[in-house]
Length: 171
Image (tube, rainbow, N blue to C red; front, side, top):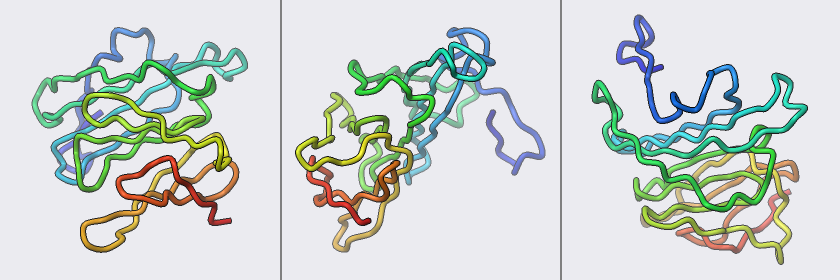
């Protein structure tokens, strides 16, 4: 749904997910809005059973640059490779605060979409804990930011901007 008047009224926002089946089969939804307010990303999972006992997976990741149009245009930017099978449990999405064309997808691993390609930012050598759930940005001065990730193992900080595969535990 979408509202422009603090929920005094709202509209059903149809998108590519509408053709995927009954909305009762959808699970977790992650929404990321760019600081410019004109770019919106949606990641959505599906479940195979109401209690997730049969698993589920990623339904897709979509982007629109015209979220306030009566019928927004959506582009499927779903990653070709997901590192997990329980996106109904772990799923996060965040737009780079300095670049609306870059979005980060947290799942079992961690990926970045740069407007063209998905790249894996998970660094198994540093043993970042799997099951990513939350993403946040902290200003780091001079137009730079620090990406923080919350997962089952605590809080992790990326050691570069733009983020790379270098992570440090803050636990």
